[in-house]
Every structure is written in structure tokens, then in C-alpha cells.
Length: 243
Image 1 (tube, one colour):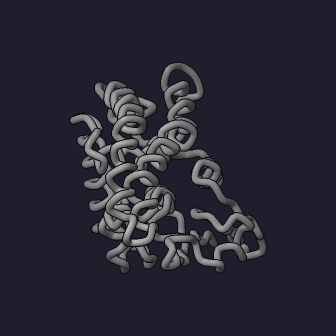
Image 2: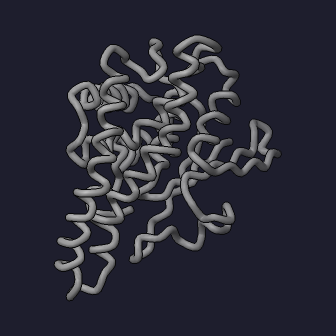
């Protein structure tokens, strides 16, 4: 059995989408951030870094003991563990290259810029003493506009150009690892008001796909019973300025 250790305001939502698409039986163990918006100590007992997402897999016979962190590693593991039947990119050609690039681009390039944006505009001001919040918000906001926003625009233009004539990042008829990893930063492009029209269509299409999946699902996991998950929104907590 696979258990997803799911922290609110984290990248765990990606893994929920993939697990539901695969139809893999799984359980969700949910963790809440502390008042300082840090991961709770309980996650450190699962994995030394205490970051989410994390999966544990005991196998069909409940005798296994796999513990795996990092979104990219989890996505690749789950696709392979399910026999490489679905969501597999082409083995060669441009589809292979696109999937390879965007699978690594998601965490290697675009997400660090997103984190910078969040730190400047949300995290630092909101965690500062209240007497300094107004000042820091104004100063850091201007710094963000001059330094971070132009970089976000570059990423937005790249993603928009790539999705111009593609339904999925690898160009096929189904999502691949690139899509399961890119959904989180692509939603953030929309959240920060720098997403292009094709990017917005992409996000909308995935939300509609997730809604249909939730409505038709016969599984008994949190997807169908918890509105926090069923609403099919990946930005859990970002609306409130959480990191």
C-alpha cells in the first residue's frame, strides 16, 4: 500500500493527481504546518529533511519498506511501479526531449523563481514584526518587481510558446511526468498574473479533468471524501500567503 504524506501548502497535490490517474490504491496522511508555516516535527520521523511530498510503499504484501521524497523522484517511481503502461513519454524524438526538459525544468528553473517571488511578497513581510510589515512589504515588493517579475515573465513566455500547439508538454494525447510536475508552477504563473492565454487554458483543462475524475471515482480515499482535495486546486494555502 502506498501512503502519501501530504503537507498543506506543498507540492503534494501533484502526487494526488498522478495517483488518481493511475487508479492506484493509496492512503493520505495529512500534516498541518505550524504557526510559523513550517513543516511539523512529525514529518521528520518519516524522512530526515521533513519535507513534503513523501511516499511510503509497503508493497502489495505489506512487507516492503520504501520511503521516497522529492516530487520528481516520486512521479517517476509511481509511473514505473505501475508497469510503465500510461503516462510514458516517447522514447525518442522531440516528445522525449520536451518531457525530459520540462520534467527537470519544473523544479530546477521555474520553481526557484516562484519561491523568490513568494519570499519577497508574502513570506518575509507576513512573518516580520507587525510594526515593520508595511515598510518591508513596500520595499520588498519593489525589489520583487525589478528583479523577480522580469524573470517570471521569461518563464511565462517560454511556457506559453511551448503550449501554443500542444495539449500536453510532451505533445502526446496523455499527460506525462512533465505535466504532473509542471502543474504546480503553471498554476503559480496564473496566480501571479503572468500566465498567457494558452497557459490558462492548460490549467483549466486539468482542473476540469480532475473534477470529472473526482465525480466518477469509486475509490474510498481522501480524493472523494475530503473537499480540501476534491476541489482540484493545487494552490492549497498560497492564497493565504503561505510558502
